[in-house]
Length: 327
Ligand code: TYM
Image (cartoon, rainbow, N blue to C red; front, side, top):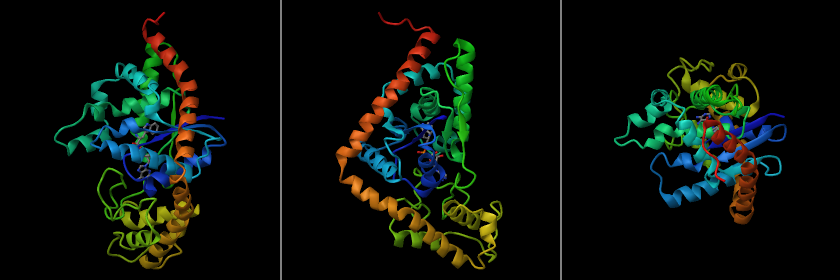
């Protein structure tokens, strides 16, 4: 059994990119691995978010993950901010990371570039993410393609820490699915679908009604040709639709392309498959929202289980780096 850890920000409603790129893999891997999944509320503080909204989004994210099939008896589902160990290890790793390597993170450059005032937390965000992973000695980290660089940083920090202070951390590896790892915005298919970019027509949320999904997919931006072909470079819109269908049907986008003679029939098939994929999840979300105790109880148990693993690693890291232990 491999030790697996991943995380998701409660910064907005989950979209099908989060679902197909990450959450479905989490569910698939929960029984064959020792899996930990974190709702990373501290990461959501790196950009402006209303406090009441953050609280309700954190709950809603837990509801979504449980509805998607995470089973608290099979995996450890917890809220990052329920454990002080993440912050503490992040500080130790901040003193191992360099300013230059954080400035080179493309996600930081993208997010910081458009803002007048940039929070320090936005810069140190990937170090907190490294702490999330390294605290649990995770071997595998299932993520979408956009987290590749952050994973590389986590590996580098672990290697550097171990070389300088002794073997404390396991070196983690990213697990990126072959399809669905980079779901693109339906209106701007050269940009990834994102919780933080406002593109209501280009983003399919897991909570969208069948009519909304149908409308968004039918209006998806394509191109001026009429040939259905998988060619992400020259036909990003059509290729994104084929990838969506591939990741819900388990077939390859290339093979699927041969089955459609018009954009309209492809779009209808994509809409139908997404609606079918999300219907059971939406039904279960409805039930879970009404059972607050069950959801909060699962998170409390998850935090306890997570702490049992996190505390010894933090202790080892503190003593390796030279902090005097209290009496
Ligand atoms: P977040 O919350 O942005 O996204 C959660 C997961 O969804 C994936 N994802 C996508 N996959 C395919 N297509 C897309 N358009 C798409 N958009 C998002 C992400 O790759 C991710 O796997 N920094 C992380 C959260 C994090 C974390 C961690 C992840 C914090 N600590 C430790 C792994 C391990 C983030 O912001 O993900």
